[in-house]
Image (cartoon, rainbow, N blue to C red; front, top):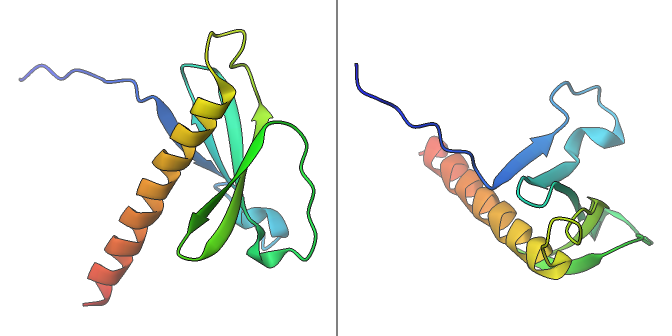
Length: 109
C-alpha cells in the first residue's frame, strides 16, 4: 500500500448541513485554520438594508455584492492581519463558487 500524506488545508468551507427551509439554510462561512478565525460571507443582494459589526469588506462575484464579516477574529493573537485573511478567505470562496458554477454547467451538458 502506498503512503498517503494527509495535508491540513488552510481554509475550510462551512455551511449548515441539515437544512430546515429557514433563512439560515444558505449561510456560508470560511474558517481559516492558521488564524483560528471564522468569516461569514453574505450575499447582500437579498437585503434592502444591512449593517454588520466588526472587520468586514465588500466583494463582488457575477455582479452580486457580498460582504465578508468576521464572526470570530483571532488574527491578532495568532500573528495574522485581519484584512489579509479576509481577502484570502474571499479568494478561496470565489474559487469555490467558480468551481461550483463550472461543475453545474458541465452536468447540464
